[in-house]
Length: 363
Image 1 (cartoon, helix red, strand yellow):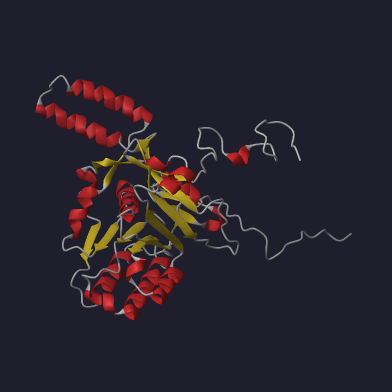
Image 2 (spheres, rainbow, N blue to C red):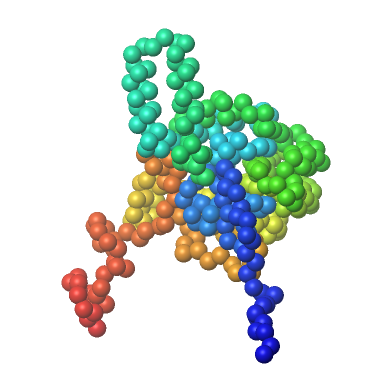
């Protein structure tokens, strides 16, 4: 009797015996995708885990409000908390000064109780030589859980990032102001990304690139659209071949429509932010929690690697709110009740007629 043969197929799932080690700041996803956090827990959930490693993320700015800076600050702070190399470029003359505006991670509940005890001890006016030891203890457990850094932290926008995060020697800044072309910045990106090649067989960390207002009037290269497209293509190719994620913001209203569409096509993940008018009565009557909103976030494209199945989101527009005026949160837009009173929306009623009574459907 012939021995039975096991049926095999070239489309069978490839399951490796060795599991990927848990590295701080990195999370394994489906189809071998590795994510880095955006610095906003709600945005990580919306995107299915965060920004995939080797992806180019673009954020379309709103020239009337700097809401894109909120996303950029959290992205940069999350990388510094995980001790990941950072390259930051902006059209300002001294981009390193922007690091002083990065938010600090919010303490967890356990850390808050310990922090409260430390504050009580500080209230006893302990000598200055003992205060530094208290500060060291704070740094040890700040932003950590069970001795390990969280994958994604909540950040306090009112509190600046601790100095020991900014003293990292792996922070590089580049000024785009006055640059006649993008060749120097391309070389800086190549040198920066060369420290973490993607296919070296040893994934230990990831690096981040943050580019603010790529198209700015004070930059001399802003008149050469083809050169900027060439740089973005080179950046995307370099990021794909390294353990890095790049976030680039640009104002679409200041560029031509064809150039904006070409940039959007090159993005793996495409987001946009928009300001909300202060006194828009129609929008206030339409949406619940309008007074707590500071802006809107639209998700136009979500990166999907190692698969041909597109990512289908339940919603693409989210409200940007500040929780307790310090932490950034994203919420789905909820329609206000049709009569303007508090309660559930008209979409949740169980009556098909004009009757307000609940129960069986009345046709």
